[in-house]
Amino acid sequence: MSDKAIVREKVEALRGVTRTWFEWTSAGDPFKRELVVEVDAETDPNTSGFNSALLDAISAEVAHVLENETTMQVQSLRIVPKR
Image (cartoon, rainbow, N blue to C red; front, top):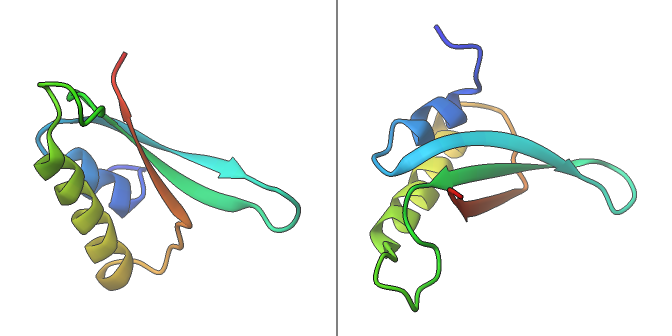
């Protein structure tokens, strides 16, 4: 069993996802949790390597897990290209 949050485990199982992590932001109180997902595809829709299906799959998986498999709250999702 992994020490990672289930939402991270499930998203990392998607083809095209290289890793995930949480970042915390605060513009005052309270802190907000952001799930960052790194992908091996281009994230610029104007390039030939852009994969909108991957972005849709990530979004759907995150929503499913947060609604059905955990009580964790994540306030935002950020998808970034692997550099």
